[in-house]
Length: 367
Image 1 (tube, helix red, strand yellow):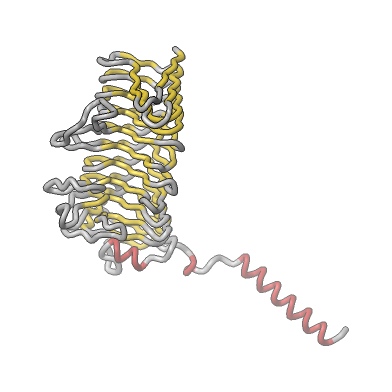
Image 2 (image 1 turned 135 degrees about the vertical axis):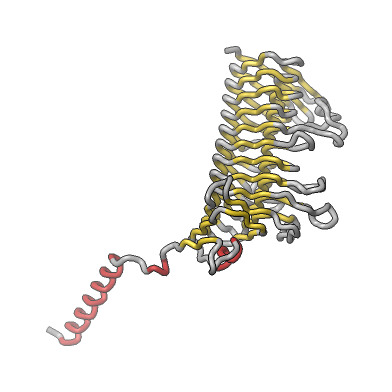
């Protein structure tokens, strides 16, 4: 045999054997996700653990209150000891993020962050001039939030600072900008603005089995999809309405202001939710099919459909001011009610609002 060929064959065999062994050998400890415990000697704060973590690491928060703002720009998992036992609390002085808002937990840089078994809580102590609390959790820069078995609460200022775009419990995306979220089995309560807000056509969210409860003393909205897409399913949304000292609230869609349990548009699925004690249960725009929702004691209307084509299938309305409103202001509006049950209301079962020569038409298929 040619000696050169023999040496080459031997070297190739050694290389292939090493590669095979390498593929079967366990990964080194350095490549395995680590668990960083807070508080500990190495990580006294949540932010110190976030800063030290490698992408993919897990941060375990022991029971306690962590009074700090936390910013996450890498893929991480944050797990507390329970929503009633571990709390990230707004500090006395908040620092604004890249969007100019003061938030308690901020996600950015396209990070995918899992948060569970903890509470994110205000209140803040700012003013509109000196920096009010902007959001409990802020999702920007293409980041993704996976929030489960958690709570976001007391997202407001003390004393109250009613500033534009302030005090939303969870705020996802921006104009322009993108963010996404999967929020499940969590409680969103006592917010000053809205419970969950999803902004821009580049943003999306899945909201499943959450409890979203507004204020009884100030004006709030529950869940808002604004040009965004997603799904709201099996949530309980309540107590979102217009309160004093707000003026101009009322059931006239041309001249008054309304607040809603769920505000949604084309590309959003709304199904199997329970909407209780809001001014409007659902306020929808564009093209949408809803189904199997339950509306109880909503003040003005259970469902309001504006400027588009809508189908409601097997929804149930019980109590409250009115059943269904169809509003046409910039295009003709058609609403099909398929086996929708409406009982015990004090106002109109179906009412149309028409403006600028456009028509609103409602057809019904009884159960």
